[in-house]
Image (cartoon, rainbow, N blue to C red; front, side, top):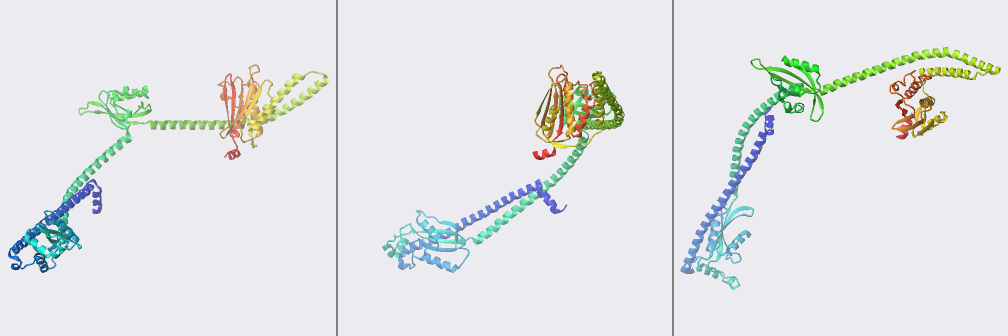
Length: 619
């Protein structure tokens, strides 16, 4: 790992963030100290420089005042020095000094009353005017920016402390006084000494010193902080690395444990539970309420007597056991399947101390096993159904071959019988013999045999459908209008299926007629109301037709057999009517169901899909 990457990691760590915060605080502290040092030097400079200048000005002022008193005593003739001595002397001094960066000294008069020199700038005018208006004026020191230069200005008031000085000024300004200017009086400010000390060099030096001090403090604090932070960072890295190794070890153990179990348990030498692992699913599967119980007391569901016997034998022999399964009801009422395994443990002397083991929720495995079993059962049922269908088709094929042979062999004798019967009827009619009844019975029997042959042929030979798309309600109404039922049977219908279906009209006509005939035959002549109801409706994308009668119903043990070929409860039936109906419906891709209740009649329900044309119109 490179230095830049290590440094980046250090800055991104909590120690690095703390160090950055410490640097910020150190910077603020160093800046505060540097600023304080700067202000302290500035205050010292202003205080001491102003005091030095004021002392010097006091000496000058005292000298001038002493001279003025002496001049008054000696008279102007004996002391021929003009009253403007101060200004002229200071001007000469300044001229001798030239342009200096140490200080500049001026003597100025009071604004509007100056004898010779007025204040040179506005700030000076305001300061002198302010002193002249005070009863006890004191020296004033200020920091000012004059003509782009930062200076420390001290203005020292010059007060007329002697009458001679007052008289001298009044004499010099006699004309102005006559013109209205106020005369001078004793103890009045007559002017001021002004000393300007340039502060530029000092400020630069002070700024450098203060900045250097702040930088030194920041460097020292940063070095100390970095030393402690790096030490803390290394210790933190070592601690975190140890924690990562520990966490990785714990995670590895936890992964191994969770891969094999959901919870852990321990039993004492008396086979009573003394400890369970805490947290997760185990808090639901096993709780403190099971502490002190044996497994027989804690487990009450899902264990057979044989399982208990084997488990007790293992425990008595102090053998390990595996995959002992039982059921457990959780607090929320949900039941799960649990599998536990355990091993005995012994002390140093070999004495049995109990069992330790683990358990896991195997509900998902049980569910998979159950699902697999159900799939096997479904596949077995499908295979059996396919096998039964194959057998049925083989039987139908054999029956078809047999029926074709029988039809050929039986129809020739039946034709001979029908022809002979016709000849007998003609002979009897000519001879005046009354054989109508027996001959009619023979004729009905021949017709019945012919119908049985036709039914067998139709059932065994599946014809291709000749589909036609039509509206079912008008078609049903037409078929019912042609159907003849006994006079005491009421045939009613309610047709509410406003749709189109694709059917073979002739074959479906046979279905409807067969269902109505069966319904009529199922109702006894002296059994009360005899009524057949034919209804049609549309349920989603399905056309539904129901034929309901008020007969005695179909017994429960007979109902599953009604669609079996050749099965019939009628003495005169062939057992092919309903099987043929089912065959035609299934050939149309529909379904047929029969519900029946003893004493209340039977209901046959046929469902067919509506035509694609109808679906397109609906869409």
